[in-house]
Image (cartoon, rainbow, N blue to C red):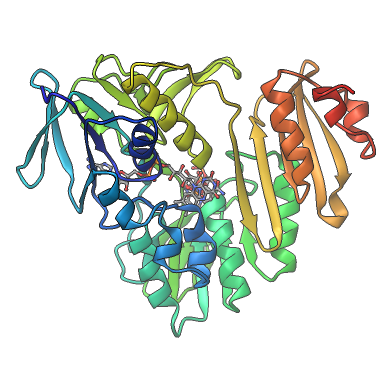
Length: 404
Ligand code: FAD
Ligand code: NAP
């Protein structure tokens, strides 16, 4: 075992944050941050937004400038993949053959795109959207393109549709389910976004799949073929668990960790999109795909490494930007038995509050940031405003969280 060295596998949002949190807390041992991609840790959210639009460059999406890692003695090993973990010998082996002993190992391997198993996906005009390299390729393909087909009406698909439509391209979105963003938002929100994209000129087809991509034609399950100069696929992600699995760690739709980010191995923690973890506030285990979770779980993992474990107990929240509309989500909007709308859907400033048996479960807000902020406090404190209070847009929700 290395005397004092943390090896972090995955230089993404969570991996970068574990390294920074360790140094901020005064950790003086060695830190090696190993990442398969060639860039220092960067933010993915701008990739389907400002970076796709060409409004920001690589330097602006980096979490920290490259010099940060030098200054804080964090050994960045980029373009390097960890191939195996030897738990008995406390070391990892890179595909280059390099062996790195560790006293603590942190797995922050994230997720990868779910492949679409249809003929024609390997055509050079077909792209997935997850990494900086993916966007650079998409942007090159946009030069001279007029028609884009996007497969998947989730966050990736709709954020990309909003940007590409705004750039003047003809955009068609194909979604296999009966509504948009079905995994995360309720039918009320899906309906608002269906109308919004329609009004902006995006053709959206729900209840529709893709059977093949042949030349410039995308063949659909409804018998139609849509012309495309480029195709973007955003049909979900799968967690990168194979490395952990091969090392014998428990995995179940994610690397299984406890509320302190510990795996069953006392020297291995895990954080971010790759984990399946308990959430005391929600009362269940789940896997999340969000920046907030990656950052907070990274902080939890760092505390465990530092010997000051502190249970992770966070209300999940995340956001999506489409056109000038900011969708903010807090809590979980599945399993509800009633919903209450606050504000006005027609003017694009509203929130939907979800309840089960009278208890607030989650809130989706469209251009109502105060509802989102108050909702984070309410859900964090386990408080539920009454439906009448929510429906009254003049009622100040703050008075429930902080009476007087
Ligand atoms: P990742 O960011 O996936 O990083 C994991 C890294 O580990 C990758 O670079 C991978 O190559 C590397 N890796 C994996 N295995 C190995 C190995 N064996 N050896 C070395 N390296 C390895 N969330 C929001 O909350 N709001 C948003 O608006 C939002 N927008 C998004 C937009 C896009 C286009 C995408 C793709 C995601 C978006 N997300 C958003 C989700 C958010 O970015 C992710 O939840 C977050 O990046 C997860 O961080 P992570 O570190 O767990 O995983
Ligand atoms: P997603 O949210 O899971 O949405 C993908 C959608 O595509 C799902 O509705 C899916 O339906 C559908 N689909 C699956 N197969 C299809 C097919 N063959 N044809 C047409 N539609 C199909 O995933 P995503 O949009 O690809 O996003 C990937 C990751 O990036 C996620 O982690 C997401 O959270 C993250 N992200 C987040 C944000 C944000 O928070 N603002 C923005 C962008 C990306 P099924 O459910 O039936 O598979």
